[in-house]
Image (tube, rainbow, N blue to C red):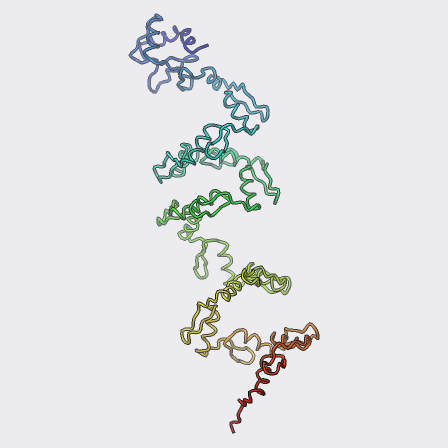
Length: 487
């Protein structure tokens, strides 16, 4: 039945309601608009007469609007019968896949696309497809970079109005959606829906690589990039790629200089929320050492620092029993036993167990010697070597033997000296088992077994075991007599 025919049939009912006290049908703040199934909104200046010609004039001069029980206005082209079902809880359309019901056929059709995977709306720019036209319209703004909705508080812009409305709650602190199970509140309804799955234990999506489970397929797909190494999000400025979109968004602030997160205590701004949270601990005094007052941005770093005061070394090497305060130090130490050298020089292929050793080695290829002595101008590659060298000029010998009191300028020399007291000979020959204090002595000894004589005389071709013996031999050819008696 057409709306106008429906109104014609209930003409007398409207007349009685209008003629009572000659008041308009609708008055502000009252519930007088509630009638039977639908009502007629007419201008207060229009009188109703008991003839069809006056009603006809009213139709042509004044646009008629149906008012539902809920107060929602309905234009002539809208469906009266479809809307009335929402008040009677009539949901005629039921999904055969999941059992969900709908009052509108259009909503039912859109819902079915979840099961069929149908996406009839495609973007003309990139070809991406969507289940609804509204999603396509929102997506197309990513190509035009149009963001018509801006926040009055922070001036941040959004492509869709609903995103702006949800964002504004971050300023007001309003959380409309609460979980009936635990009472936790959320800004967005979609976040609440995802949260409620955790109570049901419905972790449907499992990673085939590590077995980790997720409530959303999108979360699983993002997690899989950890295993595949895929980084689909690239920065338009520097072309750097990221596995997660939020990481790209945070990175782009390094180009724009945007710092949206500000400290309420001192006003300092940050580009990352995590940086702000770390900064706030300065004001709260969290993660500071009670012994020396040193502050750390992470609690884990404070725990490690405290071991310097307690002397605790919880990480034990299973091979030699040596203990370490840091797990990373234990991992590096264990390479002595395993022989692992994971740090490869790209120039010559030489391997190192420590990354720092590789960094020093690379300077041999570049010839770089950035550390120079202020006394004699000698340049060295490492700062530690410069410190050792400076002791030549100062005569400093900071390393003393606890047994005899002898002092040394280098710690390595002290370590070697201590073997004279302990009798330790750590370097043994694999051929005959003979042991030595110094590695260089072992190297010389091995030449006896290999018959190797690496140093040859340029005059007569004679081979000798070591360089010092070669120097002594060559005096025979030069006739030099460098050693004179002082008496």
